[in-house]
Structure formats: C-alpha cells, structure tokens
Amino acid sequence: MSRIQTQQKILDAAEGLFAESGFNDTSLRQITSQAEVNLAAVNYHFGSKKALIQAVLQRYLQIVMPRLEQQFDALLARQQPSTLSEVLAVFVQPLLELKQVKPQGTTLFLQLLGRGYTDVQGHLRKFISHHYGSVLNKFVLLVQQSCPSLSNAEIFWRLHFSLGTVVFTMASSEALFDIAAADYQEQADIASVIRRLLPYLAAGIAAPTIDSKQLDLMAQATF
Amino acid sequence: MSRIQTQQKILDAAEGLFAESGFNDTSLRQITSQAEVNLAAVNYHFGSKKALIQAVLQRYLQIVMPRLEQQFDALLARQQPSTLSEVLAVFVQPLLELKQVKPQGTTLFLQLLGRGYTDVQGHLRKFISHHYGSVLNKFVLLVQQSCPSLSNAEIFWRLHFSLGTVVFTMASSEALFDIAAADYQEQADIASVIRRLLPYLAAGIAAPTIDSKQLDLMAQATF
DNA sequence: GTACATTTCAAACAGCTGTTTGAAATGGGG
DNA sequence: CCCCATTTCAAACAGCTGTTTGAAATGTAC
Image (cartoon, rainbow over all chains, first blue to last red; front, top):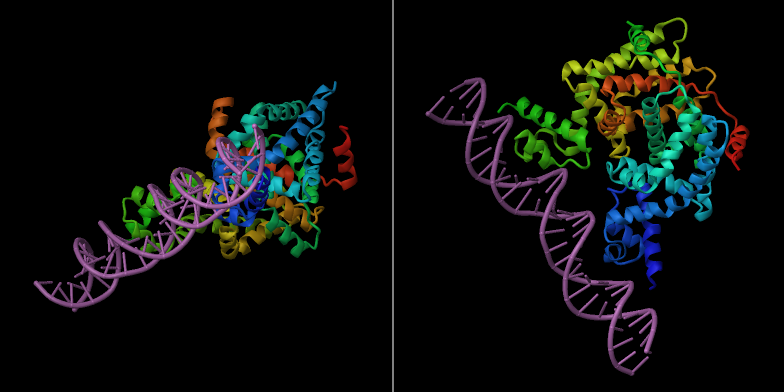
C-alpha cells in the first residue's frame, strides 16, 4: 500500500476519535484498528503519538491560518480602525470553508482545537503559538485598535476569557447540541453556534470596565 | 493512625495534585506518596479513584453551595427582579469565603472545578447537577428574570459560554498568572481575576442579539 | 529477474495504571 | 491481658499504554 494512503487512513481515523474522546483517552490501538492498519504504522509514519496529534491539527491549520492572515492583513491595511465585530466576523468564512475539505471539517477542527487546549496542558498551545504566533499577533493588534479604551492587560485577559468560551464550547459541542435539541427543539449545527458566539464575545471583550470599589459594593449589596 | 487523619492527608495531597495536573494525569501513587500513606489506603477509605475525586470536590461544594443558595433565595424573595450584575456578583462572597477554610481554598476549588469539567467528560458534570441541580436552577431563573428579552435557548447557550470562560480560565489560571505577571507586571490573584471576569460575563450574557442576515453581511464585509 | 529500499506485520517490550489480597500491626473496650 | 474490629502494609494482579524489534512482504528501478 502506498505511503500516503496509509498516512491518510491513520489521520482520518485519528481525527474522528480525537475529536470525540480527546487525545489522552484515545489509544493508538483504537486508531490503528479503525484505520485498518498495523499498530506500528503510526510510529513508522509519524514517529510518535505526539507527532500524530500535531499532524492531525496541521492538516486544518495550514488551510485556516493563511486565510485568516490575509483577512487580518486586509483589515490592517484600512485607514480607519475596524470595529470589534468586524474583527471577530473575520473568523467565520475561513472556518466554514473547511467544510469543503470534508463535510464535517469545521466541526472536527474546532472540536480538535478545543481538545488540544483542554487535554494536554501547554503542549499544543506552544505548538500553535510557535508556528502561527505572527498571525495571532495581528489579531491582537486589530482588537487593540478596535478597543482603544482598553489597556493591553485588560485585552489579554478578555481574549483568554474568549478563548475559554470557544474552546470549551467546541470541546463539549456534541453534548450541548443534544441538550439544545432536546430541551429547546432547535437545529444546532456548528454554523448556528458560531452565530450565537460572536455577539457574546464581542460584548464581553468590549465590556465597560468597572472599578473595584463599585464591584465590592455590588458584592455586598445582598447582605 | 486515626481514620480521619489518614483521610484528610489523602484529601489534602489529592486536591493539590489534582488542581495542578488534572485528574487523569495524577496517579494514586503520586497522591499516596505525597500524603505519606500506603497505596491501598485510597481504595480502603474511599473505594475508588472516582470516589476520591468526588470527595475532594465535596469538601468545597458542601460549603459553597448552601451559601450560594441562600444568596439566590434572598434575590428571589425581592419584589422587583435583580439586575444581571447583581446576580453574578452573588458568587463573589461565597467563593472568597473558602479562603477561611484554607488560605488557597478559593483558588484550589475553582481550579478543581475547571479540571472537573475539562478532564473527564460528563462524569463530574452529572455529579454536580445531580446533587446541586436545584441550586443551579435558581440561578438560571434569576438570570432569566434579569434578562427578560432573551429566549430560554439563548440563555442556555450564553450560560454555557460563560461556564466555558470560567472553567477554562480557572483550569489554566496558573499559566495565565505567570504570563500576566511577566508581560503586564500585574499582581494576579484569584480575587482580581474574578473582578475582571464579572463585567465580561455580564456583558456577554446580556449582549444584544443579532439576526443572522446582519451577521452574514458582517462576515462578507471584508471581501 | 535480480537487487535494493520501502512498507507491513506479529510479537514482545518496559512502564505505568487502578485495584485486590492476605497477612501484619494497631486500636480501644471488657 | 485478651479479644476483636479497624487500619496499615508489601506484594501481586490484570490490564492498558506508547514504542521497538526483526523478520516478512511489497514495491521499484535497473
């Protein structure tokens, strides 16, 4: 069997299992048996499980990231600063284009991203910021320009809050879809979740800052 | 050695290791060797690792949850509906009171909560909603009253978005503290993060809803 | 068709996991 | 002091993990 066929069979099986059960809870034996290849094939073709995880994500990252970067560049080239909603909306198209690669592409990628940030601490974080740090910096710059009243530290925290929202939602998206469908009779696909996410994130990031005295009063108001 | 001494030594060692490395990546041998007790002690006193995890969380939940419930009840007893900020601010006091139990109590509990939702899928989620579902329902009711313009489905999604923010932030709080201290020279303790979180969450949950046509236009604006 | 490189395969490896066992030690009450 | 329940302990258990090995099979170029 040709090299690339085996590699692809492994990648296809791995991404599905990883998205569903996480990286830690998916064994190489599950992957290789579903891919119908020998157990040793993973180490032969990818070197290690860690490298396989990165390869699974790279398939999507190398498509999404250049598209994102060109969108960021377009906004940065403008004369007047963009609004925060515009900056966030830039993610929609590149993400939904992953459906052309594979029908479930968008969902898989976002679930994998979620797993990557929650499962193994740090490991994937470093991989992404090392390979695509410059792209992410452009995004942060755009956010800073769109919210000139916020300090850099405030933006740092709020972007990580937002990362948490996205990552957690995507990692548990399957369970949330089920609950939403059962309790609220709504069609829940990845596109509709993204639609719900953007206003939430935009409002959170651009929220008015509250000084601590005001907050302490609020916290004690109910006593 | 008396029963309760051994149990407490195990719980103390376990909560620290769990908070730092997560439930899956902390072995019983690490716990028992740090607690200076025999390996079999965990299974003897708690039955299983799963039960130990629940016991670790129960120590804090049984303190926080009744306090939260009485705060919720106080708000529900009012004549006029509370504001969303008031409802969220109610969490501050009960959480910070955990510092009296143990200096690091608040941080530990929130980190454990974060780990619980990200590590093992579902398992802890069910445990909490089974034991404290009625308390959480009161919270959801308060949010609904404070945001009458939002549909229940919208509130469902936005509360889960918020859960993601909290859980993710707390699970990776140690790393975030380090970055914030290094890059922005700011004292980052758990109380200051909570202070930063509340305005973000309040704004996100109460964000104006956007109809999908409007959003599609935004997404295509940069082409 | 022979020679060489690539790929597959079954098997074993070393290491870790949570749990169980049965004997030894310790505890407190009669 | 003895009895009995509780607790500790070292050891082994069965099962899983990622990785390595060396031989067999396959592919490819001459």
